[in-house]
Amino acid sequence: MPLKISGCHGANFGAKEGGGYYAYITNKFSNRLIVVDPDPNGDGDLSDAEIAGAVTLVADHRVPKDDKISSLAGFGGQGIVALPNVYNGWVQNLNSQWSAGLTDQQRNPVQ
Picture 1 (cartoon, rainbow, N blue to C red):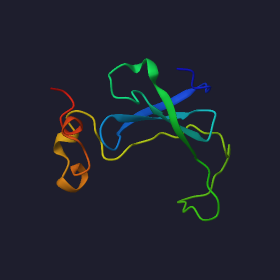
Picture 2: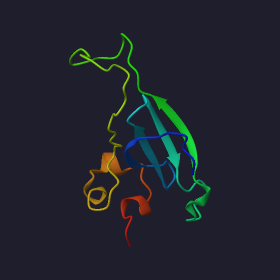
Picture 3: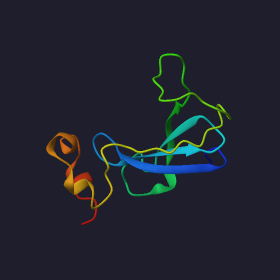
Picture 4: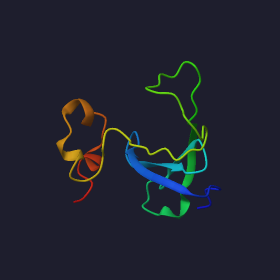
């Protein structure tokens, strides 16, 4: 799938409402997070993966910060964590508040 981005910095998977997952991908040279749906129709075939959306990772005066940017503002390279953590071995230990919105397959991804 052509993402039209280079320098992929990191990717993490998060649960998609109703089943399946989204991949959240950040880029070293961009302040944009790409959201990819690797299997939009849920048939297990990843060849139809598509970009589901994007999030701009920039801050204005309303965004709280713990320090000022000292250099390279706008350089990108942010990591990402999707909550709740749906990776096997972690998802089974979520409390009921976090796991309530997950499907049975998302709660037990490896059967």
